Length: 332
Image 1 (cartoon, rainbow, N blue to C red):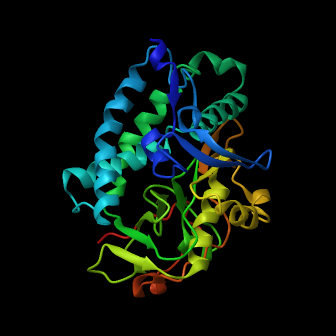
Image 2 (tube, helix red, strand yellow; image 1 turned 180 degrees about the horizontal axis):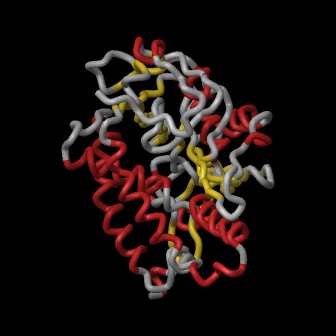
């Protein structure tokens, strides 16, 4: 069991894509201490002893899954091309995105935070109903991930190719859910089924994945799965998302990127996302003994601007009903 003690919440194959010298080391910047560390061991990054539990069932399942996904990533990096939609590789990629979003330390802290907030609202008399613990939180998050993967199938995926001199950076909470469309309306939602959702993930210093609601956004030519970016501001803004989403660390390959990171984090660190979700109790106006508990995802709010994303005609005509609690995607 000792070889399974050190459990990663970011797969090592992902970190190796941003390796600084060999497949074993990576450069990092710690946002809390504001310190750079050169050539840190990948083996000791984004991990914790028995993070998924001592029975290693989840660890073994993830290791087996990652072996297959790493081959898909290698194909994308080799060919600069995405797998065909609805193919086995494509569906596995969607599953990976959902799983990865729900398995990080950020996701763990969020799950436990939601639990503590709910127990605080419900009171001591309901403690016996709680089934969540440090030992089984991951099973709850994996259940969420598996159920929600189906909501990604209608999204369009594109591969962003970085043609600038600045590299893409990576964080220890790398998958970002964003919603430019609803942010414009004043109340961004980042649920799996939200209208206008965008899901962003860097996969190498030169390549970046984006899933998006194609009824709301135009990205590049419709027939092309790749889009080349020559605008440095676009790269900067995509990288700022990694900074704002990060739990603690930013990872990068080139030594020259250190000054670049100092520049883009200078004014962004104070706006970092502290939690994924919040719990709110809504009291009944007719019965003082009744209330509704709502769990809401907290979005990154940075007024993201990307020159290659445009609104569709449907988006411009969309009637935004501010009284609705949830704005689900349009039916095709």
